[in-house]
Image (cartoon, rainbow, N blue to C red; front, top):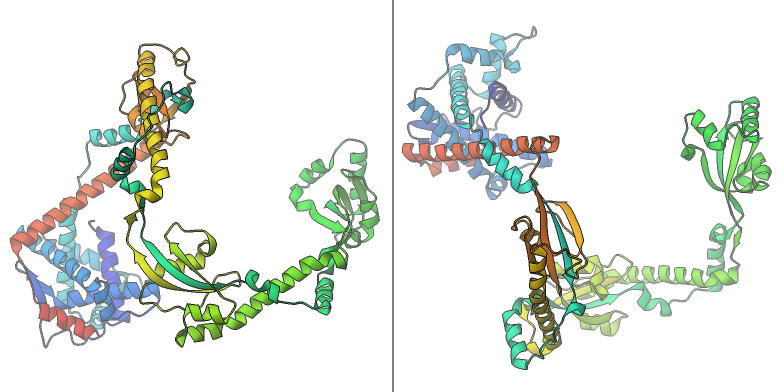
Length: 615
């Protein structure tokens, strides 16, 4: 996109600051004065080695600022950054060459104005300072004439780009056609004919017919890429029977969780605090007289009920208000009663009875929790030694024979989610494993561990007919039923199109309206909506569904409302995007034409020299 005055200034200031504070490595000092001065030409315009070096350093610095990591030239080369920057400077040179060819330039006044707009050249009074200008250029390794000529070329290039990119507004017809296509809606009525409406029997297929149908629909029976994976795994549940917990440990765990197993009676309470006893009593008198309720008092204080909610509390946590609250009925307000914040009214919203679980009843839960925890600790302690054994050459089979790990195999695909494939860690490992990988112990995420090995990689292949014959028969029958139902529905659609109602045709109708092309309707295949947008108003059709036939009638077509705020916003967005796309295409086309006419000559040895100096 063309750069205006602000864009030029921003570019130049950025270049100056980078040059001043980063230094451009060797370029500010050496400036390639003793070597090659350009890396190539576009027409009669040279591409300066300094321009390429500065542009590349700017891109590398931007990458470093974004990632927080230093970037080497080799990394820039691997990322394609060196080639991208080369293309950029070639494009700039092409624009400069074309501007020179057609005699496009800017005068000294424009250059002087740009200089005055660069803050790096201003003195303490905020105006252009000749000394600051010279100092900044000296730090950048630039001569004044060189910099001013560069600024002049940049301004001329911007004018040329602006001439190319501006004035690419698209005709209203283009935007209106897009909006009409996307925003038109349809209203239609439909009804389904299921298997119970079938008036004819279905034929019995022969093996030859099923085989032929199977051959024509191989994609339905083709297995995805499958990895045959052997794995050894161990979870806490697998070893709980081998873990014992003594009585003392159980007793200690019960005492530790005593509050969980023995909860006192509690109340669900809301509390509204007042500044003094008189205010609290006055509020309570209003409630007693029926002049206000608890909600009213809360609202008058500018609070929400959530601000007064204390949750469920036992008697002892309510302090001096405990007796009053625990003596109240659910839904009543009591008080004034003391609180840590002052006199308050309390509303009781519920009663939670005391919950006591004796030690003997708590033992099963305690044992399960302790056993699982110990099993996890056992597995955690085994993991490193098992991994060392695998690294030392042990196989999965060895681990299964010598430890509690279980050995199994799975035909894994991307859709596998049963058994060990239900673990995200296993799925990730299975997706990444290759034949060159060695098994290693990995965590399952719930205290378990596993190790896997890829035994075989099966390419996508159809399942043998004999293995899927029953499914083939089911799908064949479903297709035959759908075709028969569609044939029945054809006559019904004709009746509806001729003016009969759905009810008169013996159908149970469903009405839809205001649907765009991308709408989704439950129980309707997407193909139905596609057909509706291809139908004329009043037309009725019989369409196949999933094991059913559908009779569909188009009732109305509603064009997009071009005056609505939403459509107006979308219109502006489409217009801008389309115009920008066309403008960019025009710019690329002209740039390619300029380069083709002028000719490009790149000295790769000079490019390599620039990259070497940046090392």
